Length: 271
Image (tube, rainbow, N blue to C red):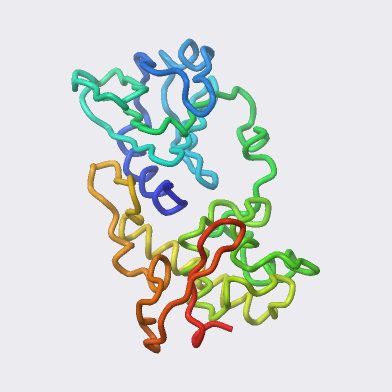
C-alpha cells in the first residue's frame, strides 16, 4: 500500500500539471471503487479551475472553488498525467480531463482506492476530522508523542500507526523509525521516556523526508507519477529483512506479529 512518502511523491508529481488548469470533463469507467464515485463529482468538476493540490495523511486533496476531491490510492492505486487520447488500460478507472488536452488518470487494479467529493471544509470530512497531526508538520514533535502515549499499553509500532495519534505513518516507516530511535516495536508506548520520544520524532521526520527525496518505497505495486518505481526500499534497515544482518551491528534481524502484521527489529540495537 502506498504510504505517506509515496502519496506525497505523487502529489508533488501531479501538482505542477494541475494547478491553474480548467477541468473539461470527468470520465468514470468504473464507479465501484472502495466507495462509489459520487455523481456529484462528475457533475460539479467540469468547468472548474484547480486552485491547489494538497495532502492530508494519505489523501490527496484537489481543490476547486466548487469543492474538493478527496483521492486515496488504496492498496494498488497510482496516478499518471498524460494526453487524454492515450488509450486506457483495464484498471484505468477514472480520468480528470483538462482543457489543455492532458488528463489525470487513476489506475487501481484492486479497486481499494477512492475518489470522493465535498463542498465543505475538507478538514471536517468524516475521513479526515479525527486524524492526528502531520508527522512533517509544525504540530508534531517528541513532546507531543510523549504526552499522547501516557498510560498506553499499546505496542510502540501500533501506537505510531494509530491515525488518531499520527497521520499517515504506516507499517514500513514505523518499523524503520523505531530502529533509528533504538526502540523495540513491541515495547509499550506508555513506558518510553520523553528523551526517547524526542529521538523518535526526529527519526520519523528524517526517514519520511529521505523517502520522499528517494521517490517513495516500492513494495508490490507502487510507482510514482512518471511510472518509475521509488527507490527507498534499497535503504531499508529492518523491514522485510528477517534473519538478515543488522546494518549497524550484524545481529540477525528478528520478526514478530503485532496485531496480525509483521514487525521487524534488531535485538541488539533496539531495547
